[in-house]
Length: 308
Image (cartoon, rainbow, N blue to C red):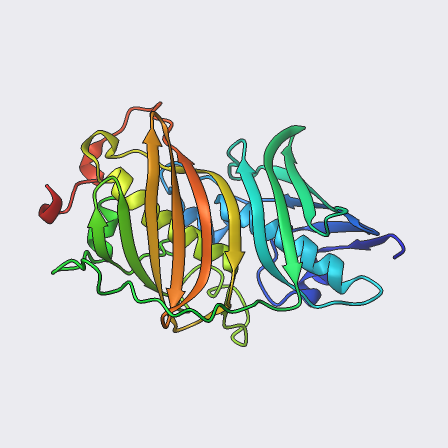
């Protein structure tokens, strides 16, 4: 493929979703893109509003958009979806009005490796896989009835625990909570959620990265409900071995389970699973960090009465 440059309008014409890239340079199996995350981007209103940063999953989505466009712009003009995140490591936070440079390159393993830099410093590194379509798992699972809460926590109670807010809050209710260990949540994506409030009405497919974010929020709840962690922010550190089995659509209820395997010092690891209609749609290993470096007021992050 010859070298090719794309501006924002050309990017919008290729992908039917809010673009997370401003410009792209395509050169065979290597792509370079830029993006300035303007302070008026809608996700900043819901992703740690008091201390806004770009969600790590949206950095991954930017890489995914770059890979999808690279495939569509190739001589074969392939249509692909993100099928796996082998790794994603978030090195430094990205703040409003920061401008990143994304580089993505195909490897001999047929995966795509990328890095995002901010003023020369690494912000994120990834290794991704793309496929023409996803491969559903045939095993049916039922986790909704296991140790369910007699009174599920609603959205307002969830907001007492984690700092996320609409349109970037992806928990409708908590149906199981084992403090410090496990959480099961439900989420039905709607038109008012981030992404859908900005894309064309014809697009009803939930980006896979938002399922990852919903699972991460489920994992933050059992950690931040712990007394010593109240008022803290759990930052995404890594995503590994993520596999997407099936696409999720508007109106489908997603049941998300995140079990924390280990919490040590200022970091923790866990395993996440997302299910729709009894079938797995996503699973991954996640790691988060609790900086615990700031003064904070716990009054805005109280524990719901049932867990005090």
